[in-house]
Length: 130
Image (tube, rainbow, N blue to C red; front, side, top):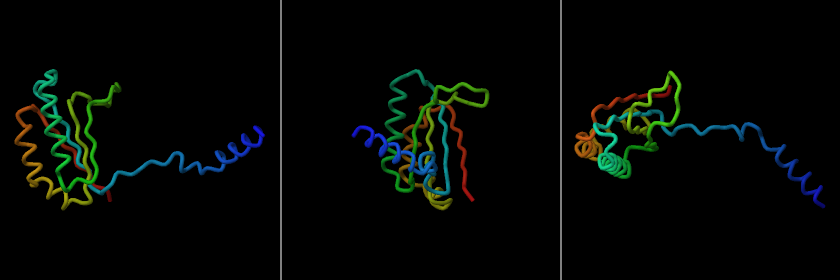
């Protein structure tokens, strides 16, 4: 009986399409907005917490964003990697017009007002798919 179950299990695994096992999930939307923040005092926990609170509140209330990722530098070390930033924000939009609306949305303006005193530098990379 064990051999029958093992045979059925192996047959099932082998029958799974290989592409489904290795398939990646595309980012939602055609417009990706990547923002990197360097805090003035990254070692100060109160500054980090204030920044994260403002950023999370912003992402929870903004109506234009369709997907988001808030992160910190990964522990990777290769010559092509810049991990000098403190936090990153990656968001996506369906199109350029929606991203333009995001720039003047009250939630975005409030976030900038609340958090800009905490950062020393911000760098933005925008990308649009064809």
